[in-house]
Length: 482
Ligand SMILES: Cc1cc2nc3c(=O)[nH]c(=O)nc-3n(C[C@H](O)[C@H](O)[C@H](O)COP(=O)(O)O)c2cc1C
Image (cartoon, rainbow, N blue to C red):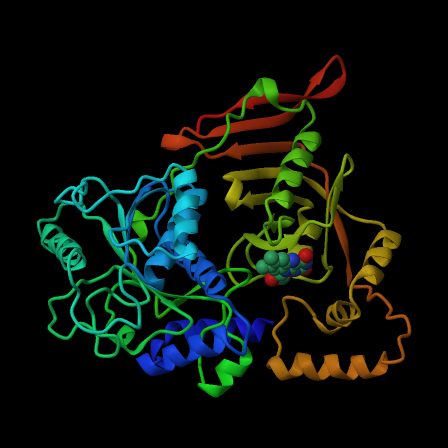
């Protein structure tokens, strides 16, 4: 799995390793898909349009780019644009459509009905403002696809001109809408690209099925591939080399992401209000609510947490007194927060001289952080560690024996060799004994802080700390300035 991810990243970095199709090959592939492979044109159009919408949503954040104009031609490329507009509507964008030459086939009239039922406005060419830059943030160029030959005729030649005018606009440094071309930038030669050098220069190109030869000439910052339906028989026949799609995504980037100005990276958080009067009196109950939200939000490892420890002096390890690393939360209740590790690791040495630690959870897609979760730490009972150790996959059990965590090893082979030896030893399925140097820790929190991102940096911060009231320890809640 890890190797696959690394090789996919290498692919993404190198556009030369991707295959490009001639016009003839692209047409043949469509025929095979819709012939022997049993696809219908509606299906392919739906997946293509969804890929275009997914690519747009990946790069152009709704908070900055909500107003979309899809300019759709009469053929399949225009149909992809209509489908993309429908998905963009459902993603929260505000699409409008310019579809001047409607095709009277049920596939297209059906798409128009679907869009009209969503109250998506259709604008005629005459309705469009001469200068598109004030009214739209994204222009989807879905006029002509790979089967187009010759020179664009009215009204599309005029529409292409309007997209061209935006480059001049760009040069005056005013904010200009971005152009997203579907498969072929309209007006370009399908194989040669922008022959005269005076065609449109899209910011994003979404190649479908596989990039066409003209895409080699694309110089914009965002080249994506969509159409996640190519079966192995086509990959083999055309010797296609395409980047793997990540996870469940309908699109994948080709080529390096554009270099960015790190100082300009910022999100404007939008979250529901987080108020003292609405939170649980006990921070464990509040943590359970947030943890359940994190699980439900489909984060890959909602139980990943940063664990910070501190030694007594900096001599034991390379430099510092403090250290942090990620570990996985394996349980929490009123008794504390539990994780498992190696009892001879750096963190373990630090905990042995200073048995206190701080945990940090960050749930990116919820704009939430819980940190610090701070308090004294103790080893869990041997029975508890034993029980958890044997619940782990056998490979992880062997890995825990092999790894003398945080010590220097002569190389990768060293670990693998030992692993293979132990794997062979336990091949009969017999019990793998838990090594003494492996087990759990439990942190009993004395302080909790719940943080939720809000607009204009006016974030919510609620700090729970223990105070004594009438001889009893009770949780006190304070709001901290962000
Ligand atoms: C997401 C994630 C989860 C991890 N979970 C654990 C864990 O549960 N236990 C563990 O010992 N190491 C875990 N690690 C590895 C640690 O971050 C760290 O490399 C290792 O524990 C050695 O830390 P130390 O040398 O500071 O003691 C995880 C790493 C990542 C990125």
